[in-house]
Amino acid sequence: MTHPAPTQIATRDLFRLDGRTILVSGGAGAVGTIVGKAILESGGDVVFLDLMPQMPEDKWRDVLASTEVSNAEARYQQLNVQDEATIMAAMDQIRTGLRRPIRGLVTCAAISGESDACDYSVSTFRQILDVNMTGTFLITRTVANEMHRANVTGSIVLIASISGHVSNRGINSSAYNASKAAVHQLARSFAAEWGHPQNTFPGSTKTETNPHPSTEPRRVYPPIRVNTLSPGHIDTPLSEAARVRGLTDEWANQNMLGRISQPEEYRAPVLFLLSEGSSYMTGADLRVDGGHCAW
Image 1 (tube, one colour):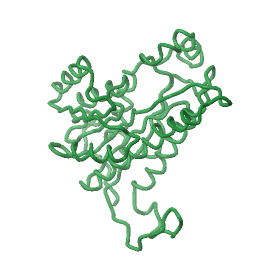
Image 2: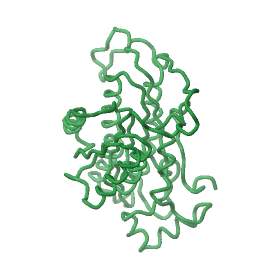
Image 3: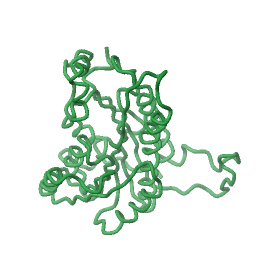
């Protein structure tokens, strides 16, 4: 299904998200909470997803204040992106009572870990890949299935990193870097599958991973756009240890603006990628890094 270009949308409305629900994984984190509030203020309802039973009270008060800007609604849902069963159970709860269809997702859930490669615990290595790559895969395909079920268009933003483009100078984090490079490729693959039916040949080949291939024509759905956002280094509570070691100063010296970023600086990029302002953009990466990768 080729979807028409949104040529009739007024310029002032290009970044609006009215009439849709957006899910934000890692929604209790520094970046997830900030971008979730920005979505609310732009008219979209938001479901904040995270591991903890509920968002801290002070943060939730800030979230509720943002709902008043555009008469939006906010919900919180406990969810573990590593566990498909809990994702499906959570989605059943989310689906109940939604006043607007799910038409977007921002994946902020991720973990990092520093270690020399020769000493890296294989269990830690696997956990980082499981959260950052497999977890992103599971929540993204679940949300895509919800959009298909509702027969609506959508936009998905996978939070990647400059660490998917370059290695981080001054800190050894091979698992994290590999996981974020995988997120880039995952987004391109999703974008190809969900953009237009012409992107996939009919049928499929019988293999060990596909023992019962369907012979039926693939169903046609409205397009879902999938892009990545690659932040540079961000000043969050999690970066406190790096600040004590002098790493944040070193990272600031490695980019063209001479500082690391603030979570608030990712509000506009996320709104752009979710909204009709980026209607002809899919399978792409938006790098917001102060020029770190441009040297």
